Image (tube, rainbow, N blue to C red; front, side, top):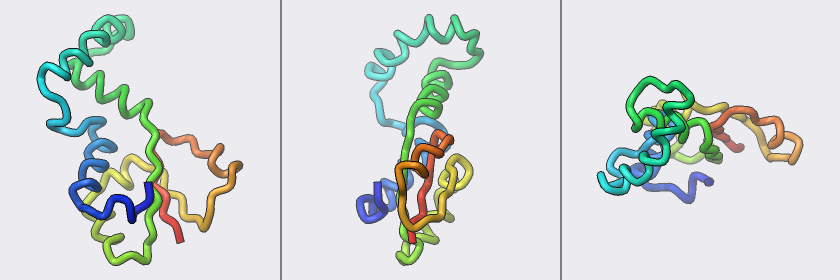
Length: 118
C-alpha cells in the first residue's frame, strides 16, 4: 500500500494495531471470532502454546502476515504518521530506497516491512 491510498489517520492506526498486536480490536463479532478460534485449539495444544486463544491467533497473524507500506517522507503527514504509530518502527524493517528491484525484494526477511520512498 502506498501512503496516498490510506490518507485517513484511522486507517493508519488500524495498520499500527495490526503490526503491534496482531489484531484489530472489534474487527470480529464474538460469534465470528469463536468460529476462527475453534479450529486453532488443537493446533495450539500440539504446539504447547501457553496463553489464550486470542493470543495464539494474534501470534499467528504476526508470523504469517506480510505488509508493505510505501511512504513518501516529503508528504506533510509523514512525520505525524510515524510518530503516532510506533508499530511502524518497532515491528518493521525500514528500507530507505528510491526503487525496488526483484533482487532487493527477495532479500527482505522481516514479517512486516515499512518502506519509505524518496
